[in-house]
Image 1 (tube, one colour):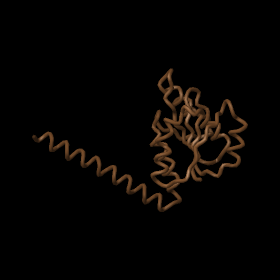
Image 2 (cartoon, helix red, strand yellow):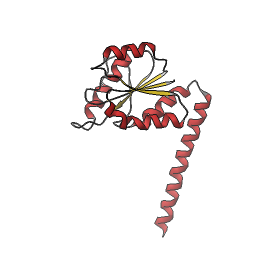
Image 3 (cartoon, one colour):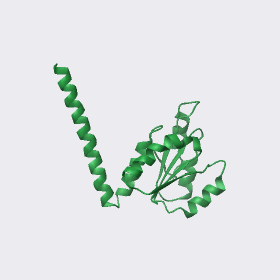
Image 4 (cartoon, helix red, strand yellow):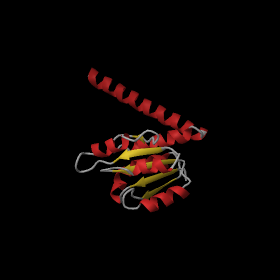
Length: 160
C-alpha cells in the first residue's frame, strides 16, 4: 500500500471517492480508513505507527484537525482534503487545514477537490516511480487534447 486515505467520519466517503477512483485509475495501491483525530486519537496514533503508506490523504470537515494530527505524527507527506460541511460550506475546514503551525506542513487541495488530492498523491509518488511519471504525462496530454477538441468544436459552432 502506497497511499492511506483517512476520513474523520464515514460520512466523508462520498467526498473521498474521487481520490480512491484516481488512485485506482493509476494503479496505486491504497487503503481507506475511518479514524478520527478527536474521537479515536489512540487508534489513529497506533495506525500511523504501523502504516507503510508513503503518502497520506486526510479528509475531514468542521474543525478538520485530522491532517494536522497526522502531519504531527509522521515525516511523510500529508494532503488535506476539506469536506464541505453544513455550516460554512467547507470554508471552516479549509481554513483549519491551511493554518498549520511552523514545522508541521500539510498540503491542501480545494474544498471537495477529491480528484486533485488523488492526483497530488500520484505526483508525489511519481517522483521516484518512472512508470507513474509516464502515466501522468499521458494523463496531462489527454487533458490538453480534450480542451483542444472542445475549443475546435466551439469554433465550428460559432462559425455557423
